[in-house]
Length: 402
Image (cartoon, rainbow, N blue to C red; front, side, top):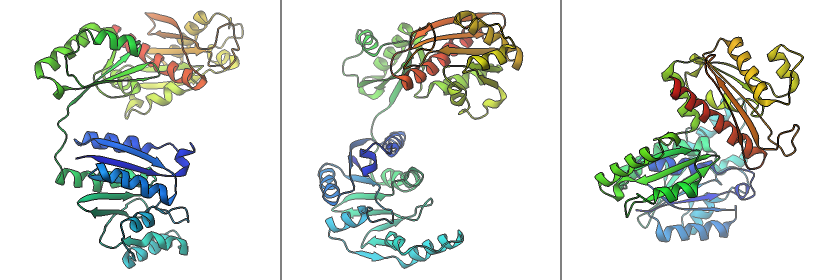
């Protein structure tokens, strides 16, 4: 069984909107034992929709579409697909009344342009959209199924979870895959792959994904024997023990959040170059308020003076400056561990240090670790790499001492 995804939206091709539906669909299919085989993104043009749909239907048993179900004249997905399949559209009076009541509850009168959302292809099944007015639609076309979903993620994702996944689970056999993930830090993708190739079992289905200092390795445990899979994973652990972030497919802030919670440490930050990026990443973890005490954004020299309560500061020596800021953070918040990060994100340096330079200081009052690093990329990439690097250094500090 093969699954195809058709995203319809000129705004995505123009770069105005990020196609998060693709990521979310692929993830939810995988989590439920299925795999997305093909993906096409096209503009809001009738011939484009028809050609893309026909292409996917040739090879796929199930096709999901996203976008083009709104009330405006450029929303033509439902009309185009119905015409392509020789299906008439009929007004669903119950849905129309429901839409009007929904508008009325907001103290508004529904515009006539929205009536088009209440038309359903004859012979199709209407699927409940709990988050919007355009219903999802399921069409059985020559024993191949087309799911027509709205584009907004808050409407698309619930339809995937409530309608698509249950349908697939009931009617199709799940993929025989069992993926193992290993997340690495401080490794280059090419050198990591070269080292792993030395002991990788023949026939192993393996893939690498690099992103801002983190390498994600994924392999299918079912592509080799159980013994081979276990030995391979054990060898990875022995070879890269100091560089493994996690054996799960989770973000660095999740790893850090779990570690802080398990250690029951009180943490504080003083962020300069990252401007609160590390703090905002950490607070994605539910319950982290028990352990994350506070943070200062010391972006300018004046703000650094305020935290240090000192007018006579040597701003040229970042090693000394990061140490003093970390000590001030420990004292201010009475935290167990404090981290400071300084750096130059560019594109032009405002100090004696070149663009991409960062200094990280971590201390618990008794032990202090200060390190400097060089981040590559543009400004946005340097900031993300710096945030990831700081969290990785904090993970190592906590693991080594606690």
